[in-house]
Amino acid sequence: QVQLVESGGGLVQPGGSLRLSCAASGRNFSIYRMGWYRQAPGKQRELVAHIINDGSTNYADSVKGRFTISRDNAKNTAYLQMNSLKNEDTAVYYCYIWSGITTWGQGTQVTVSS
Image (tube, rainbow, N blue to C red; front, side, top):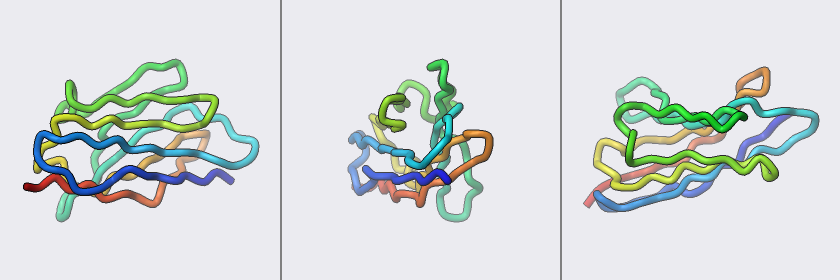
């Protein structure tokens, strides 16, 4: 069974930066894809970014050029560097992995406000 632990959320002013981390632990698993979704109040959960085990990445149009996803395979950890944050980035960010099944993290709040 795989478990995910997220960290790095918080309150930041518009234009600021945050870095989210997502660490996977467990036994006998291989991660094929890691990433984040986010859900703002009253809105559907949407994909933010993901990274596949070959290193290829995919981003939502709304975050391209501002967010960067990376991965440390040795640590089974993914990172989401978020720069030039906007008010509309405010949401709960959920890390996930796909290892044959999908596992979700507990979510971390990101609030962008002046």
